[in-house]
Each structure stands twice: as structure tokens, then as C-alpha cells.
Length: 202
Image 1: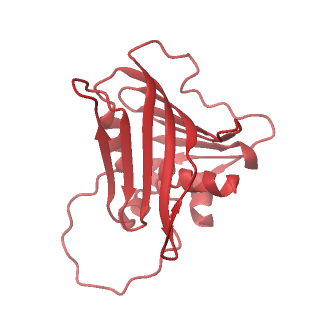
Image 2: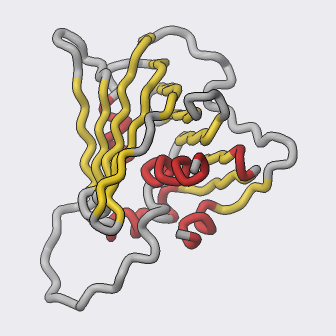
């Protein structure tokens, strides 16, 4: 079950791994749509009032499968951010094992899944078309009164009926981050693959 929980969480941070395999739709007349906005841009913008940020997090994922609502147990997490375009989110099982390490840096994604000894890398431009086909992806932030820094981020994949809730605590703003906060080091024995292969699996 731990591995299944991991993949649900990665659904958003990959921004597309749940998008392939969707049923084909009947062609309809072309309708002009508003310009596509990458949800990662919205996520980064939520933290843009800070130069840097470090916080612990509780990560909760709710979804609907075969008409039944599924509420997964919360995960522990760590969020690191540096303006303008670096963010790292690590997810842990409540008992301690690391489930994923998702890093976005300068337009590139890096994803490590320790339990499977696999890592995936790629540029966001490689799957923007999948994101656009997924339908609306809404990103909301909540801020304590008098603060410009959010303590809660909610992401909703409307058509996929997936809701992700990140509640931040022990927030440290504009403090020095560890030098390796956004470095990507692949552990020994981990297989590295293009992120496109993970998208095709789902």
C-alpha cells in the first residue's frame, strides 16, 4: 500500500503521470480556450513573497476511484523554496521511510522513488501538452492574517477528481538554506530514466 500512496502523491509533482491513458473523446467543434497556464507557475507564485523558505508539511491526498471517495493517510513532508523557480518537496511515510523526492529547478524535473530504486528526469516542456489535456488544475493558497506567506496549499485536478492538501508548519522564511538544497545526487544503485517513460506507464 505504501507504493500506491507514493504514486498518488507523485501524480501532481510529475504534473502529468495520471494524464496518459485517458479515454478518447468524441471530436467536437473547435472552441477558443483561454491560454494554458502551467500549474507549477501558480505553485511557485504562492511562495514568491519570500526569497527562500523551508517548512515541514503534512500532505493529504483525496481522490475518487470507481465512484468511491478515497482518503489516503497523511504523509509527512519537507518543502524547500528559493525564488524565482526552485522548489523541492520530499515525502515520508509517518513511520519514517522516504517515499519520494521531487525537485523542480530552472524548468527541469527530478524525481526519486527510493522504494523502487528509480529516478526520473526531464524538462517541463516535454509534457506541457499532457497537462493541457488534463483539464483545469486549480491551485489555492491560504495565508494567516497579516502574512504574505501561505501556510496551506490546495491543488485540485478537477476532471481527475484529485485533491492534494499541503499544510505547512515550522515555516522559516528568508533564512539560509543548506548548500545542497537544490542539488540532484542520484544514490548508488538507482536507475535513472527519462520522465516520459513514467508518464507512459500510467
